[in-house]
Structure formats: structure tokens, C-alpha cells
Image 1 (tube, rainbow, N blue to C red):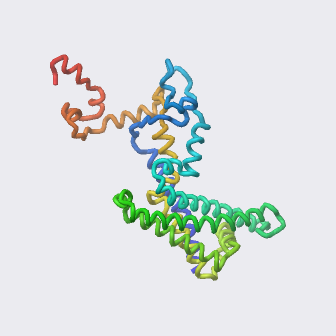
Image 2: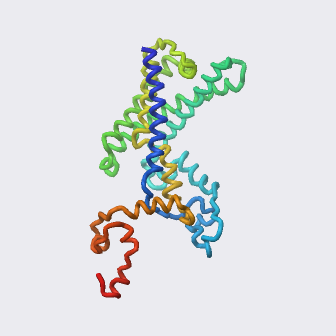
Image 3: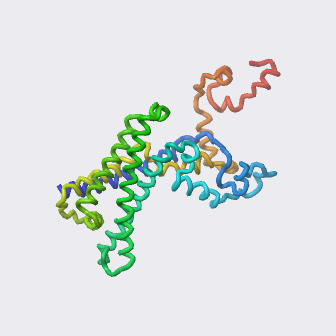
Length: 314
């Protein structure tokens, strides 16, 4: 059984990485999206404070476009670590979704610390040795793990109740929403039980990861720990296959869609994508589009209704 658990873990890691790569490739190879151009654009620098941008400059196409990384970080950091938009737009939801997300952040940090501890163990400097750095890793592991489990449980339970009791959320909640939250709730609850009863210092978890890294499928003697590993790795493999993949796809939402204001000047790659989209057939039923009898969007884009009316044509 232990060997099966190791094989499932390797497979879960492969699925996790493959699913992320596949989603990114799928997005990058999609047709060109309609630009939002919603201002303020974070990388517009000082102009972002009043919703301006490079287009307000005279002869802007002849000037170098300056992008402010600091401006982007000022928006991204509060959004990622504090869920600023949720706080401002749906505060009652924030009180549940923030501990859920913070718990996941801490759990992710916990995994990183476990890996560092496992590498130290394989290198002959295990947690508990005379190496201060490894002792710090061990202490942070014991802090981040339980705190992450507890916060995720509180957040998941709160979000389940919120989706059931809030009419606005209930109307848009699907079976998958509840399944995902219940999966996190059960997985973190088992992890908390294992910490309290089986592995209080996470030595067992570090050893498992050390064996995983060194391809040494040693026997797992505690059934509860085995259950925890299975739930954890299956959850990790499952996340990028669902809408929860927003944890990395949000990068494209912000940088390519919300903030994608790169001018189309001397960009053959973009011109090629635009040509593909312009040759799509027109399927809109709106009278001002379909009424002209145009077959492609290129015809719609080049059609001038005012000129046609002046010449007596329909």
C-alpha cells in the first residue's frame, strides 16, 4: 500500500504541473480577446491616480511607453494578500473568504518549509540538529501548518454557510462550489487530527517528503497519516483542473486583459491574430450589425453606414 501512495503522489504532482501548463498554453493560443482598456491601469505610474494613461500625450505613438512595476505591485500585493477588492465590494463575504485564502497561503508556505526540512534531512542537517537555520525551519513549520489548517477550516465552513444562506450567492452556487469547499474542509480537518494525534512535530511528513525526493518508497505505518497524504495529493492534483485555477490564471486577467494597453504599432504577431478574428463569421442578431448583411467582422469593421446613406445605398 505504501508503494501505491508514493506512486499516486508522483502522479498527482505530474497532473498538477501538466494541468497548469496546459491551461496557460490554452489561454495563450486562444483568439485575441476584446480589450477592456479599463482605467486606471496600474502600470500607468502617476497618471493612474486620476485614471490617465499614455494616450493623453501628444504624438504618443512616437514616444517610449513607460511601465511602472511599482504601480502594479501597489495593486497586486494588497489584492493577493488582503483581498482588497472583496473588502471594498463585498465585506460580509470577506470575513469568510479571507481566512480561507490566508489558510491556503499558510498551508502552501507549510509545504515549502516541509520540503526545505526534507532537503536538510537528506543533506545530513535535519530539523533539531545544531544548525540554527534548520531549527528555524522546524519552528516555522510547526507554526504555519496548524494555523493554516485551522484558518482554512474556518473559512471553508463559513463560505459553505454563506453560500447556503445568502440569496445572492445561493443563486450562483453550483454543486462544484460546495464539493470544493467540503473537500478542503475534510482534507484540512484530517491534517489537523494527524498533527494533534500522530505527527505533532511534522517529523513524519518531512520523512515522507525526503523519501519522495530520494525515490525511497519506505513503508508508511500510520493509517491516519496515509489517509492525510492521499487527501492532500489528490486535492493538489484536483485544484488546477477546476475554476480554482484562478490562483495562477489571475495573472493574465490583470496583466493581459485589465491592464493590457500595449499599442498595436509594428506588432506583426498581433496583426496576425487580428486578421484571424476579423475573418470570423458575424452571428450577432443585433439590427445595427445583422441588418447590413455583412458576412465577416472585417466587412463590419470597414462598413461606413453614414457614407452609404449619403450615397443613397442601404
